[in-house]
Image 1 (cartoon, rainbow, N blue to C red):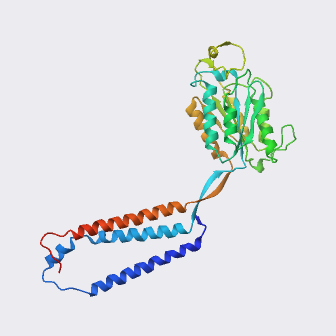
Image 2 (cartoon, rainbow, N blue to C red):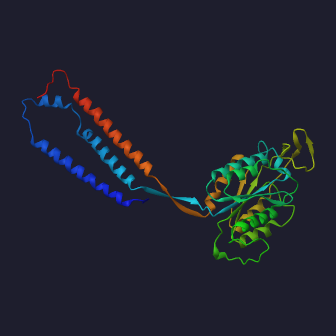
Image 3 (cartoon, one colour):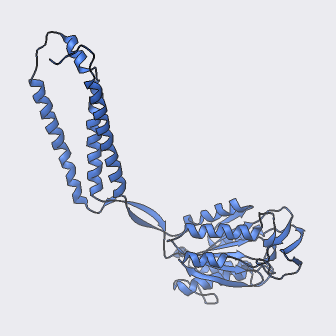
Length: 353
């Protein structure tokens, strides 16, 4: 913890002066002794209040003043946050198998919702971009901090035939290269330097299938590794056969039956190539996650910020100290008033000396 106005801590020196004044006052009272003929009468008048209870309000008052004095120095907490210069490319599979209903209501809808929640959780943090791939790969939204633009891009993803995982990785690399001069575009000659560390940027590939179009995913992973860009992969969906069902807006025109309510297809088993995804992550320094439902997908996405470059931000917490100090002083006053009132309620027949 640091302080914006450290000189304000000098006000803490007032507390020992208050304690000294209180002690001198108590000492003067002891000298002014009064002789009485009945010790029982004195005990009845005192009300039997324990010595420790008399000191609680004073202790709380002193503590409250100390907290307020500390707050006056404008304390700041240092918290770790993801670097705003980092880029996260969400590279999403929109192949026809994403209509599978083994993840409710179907895979693509659950993926949209989980990605949307992740984007909203990163507001004010790293830049995020979206690439979609089926038989080919496209940049849906370039890296940006505009949350509404990203959410609008996710709204109404359309499925298509094919699964081009390698093309998705290469397209994501090029999208990063356009805004980060430290990352070379694909096709450029880059000599891998294992001692250079990782870039601030990461690619997150979510897929429920196996590559069957375009570039080899392992070759694309080597391109990413040469640039220090980590690729995190998520193998999505279950191994349980389930019918395909997409809304009219999600149906992209691949073969099967399309009715007025959208697209439906026969039950089938659609599994991601988990070994290939693990190899991609391993080659680039990323991690592989398995997500069989919407909850596991959200959990996998929530772990991503931990992998980003972390910077430390100072947050002013003076208001916390002001609130705590005021609360302690209020409690001290209430206790003092309550116990003094109890003390004044003396037994019947007891009169002042």
